Structures are given as C-alpha cells and as structure tokens.
Amino acid sequence: MKLSVIVPSIGRPGLLPLIHSLPGAWVEWVIVFDGSRRDRQIEIGERQRELERIGLAWHVLAAGGDWGQQQRNVGMTLATGSWLVFSQDDQIFEAGADLPLAELDLETKPQLFRLRKWAPSSEALVWRERGVFRPNMVDGDCMVVPNVPARLGQWGAGYCGDWDFLRDTADLWGGVEWRDEVLQRGV
Image (cartoon, rainbow, N blue to C red; front, side):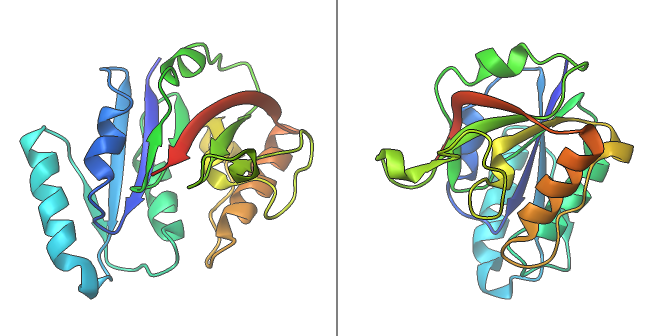
C-alpha cells in the first residue's frame, strides 16, 4: 500500500521536519507550493532546493492565498497512493503514526484521527468529542481517506474550506470511522 501525503506549502522551514517525521518508501509526498505568495518567494525557493537535495518533486500553483485549499485540490489530482493524508508545513507526524497508517484497509470508510494543534494541553486536541462532526470541531488534517476520486469532496475557498471537503467526503462514503490516535501535531 502506498500513502500520499498532500502538503500545501508557503515555504515554511518546517517542511523538511514534516517529511522526516514519516519516513518510508511507502510514502509519496505531494508538495504543492502557493505560487501567489510573492512575500514568500525566498523561503519557497529554499524549500524547493532542499526537496531537490533529498530527491523529492514539487508543484507550484500560481493561484492561492486561501490557506492552501486550492493546493490540496491539485494535490489530490496528482496523488497516486491508495490513501490520502493531509498535512501542513508547520506540523509533524507523531512518533508511531506509521503504525495505524500501515494498517489501513481499502474496504473501510475514511478515518478521522486526532490532531494536536500548537499547544500541549488536551484543549489543543482536534477532535475532542467523538461523533461531533461540524465546523471547528474537526479539521481537514484529521481525515485519512481512500484515494477514490469519485468519493472525494473538494476543499472550498477560505479559512473553513476544509469543512467543505470533510462534509462532502463523509457524505459520499456514508460516514467516517473515529480513531483515538493522535496522528499529527503542530510545531
């Protein structure tokens, strides 16, 4: 099984630590830079050179400025893995995240893992309450979904564009499976 990790990037230095936090030949990294960010061109160029040094490809989308939503949509069309995972260039995978990801079975529904935002407290956990599936209670980076294009929503424009993807994908699959494991955390 191959896993595609889709990462929109504005060139933050956290991109390489993210990539190194989930090593393995079974992981495909789909990095899509926000080419509209003129204020970040130097950082984006530095990250592209780092990716070249470790042999990873990347893509640049000229449009952007919408919290990476368009980059995620493009990343889904480029991904070749059996499962899609979404992350950001200011997060890393938790130690041991490869274990539940390696167990994924294509016969199951999308998985909704927990995510720890940028604080160590339990208040920083997303999702905090099992079964509460609504905006601001789940995050797009929580969902791990089989790569079946006809059963994937689209990331909407704007800050809560992940909710469009989550809601529509869950509807197309008839729900999600809630997982207690924390898959990623912000750094």
